[in-house]
Amino acid sequence: MESLRHVCSQPTDRSPWASATEFHRRQWLGIAAAGTIGWLTPAAQLLAEQTERRPHEPAQSLILLWLAGGPSQLETFDPHPGRSIAGGSRAIDTAVRGVQLAAGLEQLAAQLGSVALVRNLVSKEGDHQRGTYLLKTGYRPDPTVVHPAIGAICCHQLAVGKTEIPRHVSILSQQWPGRGGLLGNQYDAFQTGDPQHKVPDISAAVDAARIAARLANQRVVDAAFAVGRPRQVESTLHAPLMARARQMMTSEQLAAFDVLEEPAAVRASYGDTPFGRGCLAARRLIEVGVRCVEVTLSGWDTHTNNHETHAERVATLDPAIAGLLADLRSRGLLEKTIVMCGGEFGRTPQINRLDGRDHWPHGFGMLLAGGRIRGGYVHGQTDPEGKRLSPAQGTSVADLHATVLTALGIDPAHEEMAAIGRPIKLSEGEPLTDLLA
Picture 1 (tube, rainbow, N blue to C red):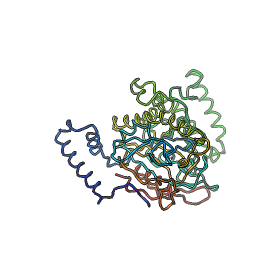
Picture 2: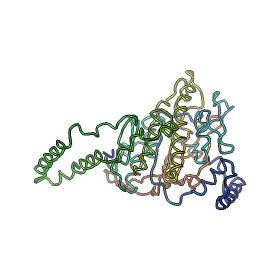
Picture 3: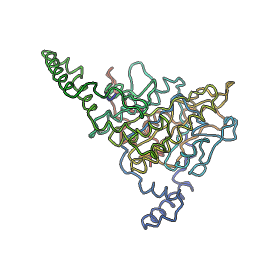
Picture 4: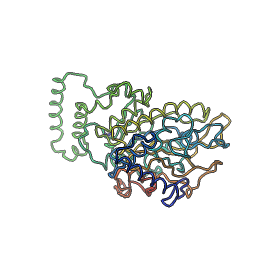
């Protein structure tokens, strides 16, 4: 039932930018301690608050905003305005000096102080299914083993707590939701749809007395089957699965899926869309101990009409991700939650004959926020002329996964045994230490 080193534009500790930033942070901390931050600008207040709240403990949950189809880096997180590869797309300034986002992401731009952008991801997978597998597991597909998605790893490695509902949830899931892989099917993502509708198949179709009678009859049948078959009974996992299903069906925590319980103003801040409601549900779910929520926004496969389609998708993404970040921060949850946002690859720097962009795994982006992720920071860049990044120039997906796992307090080098008798690391990458505050 519980069915995701070439570094450009990154100041070093010795750079004037870094020194000035640390100086200002120390100043603002002193000012905040004196209780005199009221005169600061909103941006300065935000940075002071973020500095005060810098977490010392690892995050406890992961929210993966999955942009299915492969979003264009040029029309999202890595614009190159004025260059031929922009194809006429515009960029906007953000709360971080010198860093721009694509036009349409104005709400996110205002919160970029909480966000890190990895702009130089490289991959060898330009196919949707294979690319999705790589980005969600950190591994390329292998016929001998099914690697666990990062959400499944979170559920396997992090504390269970008192959560009575599935701890790995996929909202608006498409073709390839996160799987438990070698960790077991019990870590597969629980799939559900638009949170404005009730979660299907969790309410009994008969009254309580009849349910009790059915359960009593089931116990009789189970006991008869178990006679002389202890190993078979254990291997089916029937009893624990039934127990978890029953626990979920009767749990008050199911209310976390119901976004209609939220005030209208909160719902509006995320945008009146299925994806916006999915992001709001993600916040509600992690509040009750769900370890990973994946929310899918599909429609980014823009082989035709790239600019028009991306503008529509961005109009949905911007309020949802900005609303999520603001809501997490206001509730003290951002320091306990890692937010990832991206897709399986990017789009070509060239516009094709159908005004579209094709698949491009040779330099694309991912957004990270929350927990120990360093806010207001850019790691790497794509080539302004549209040339492919080599592996030496880019960041591997494995390193991205190792970074997120480290921010969650999970050892990327931890090994689990695959069915073929081979130990498999949770990630073969190395954490990007510059991304970790």
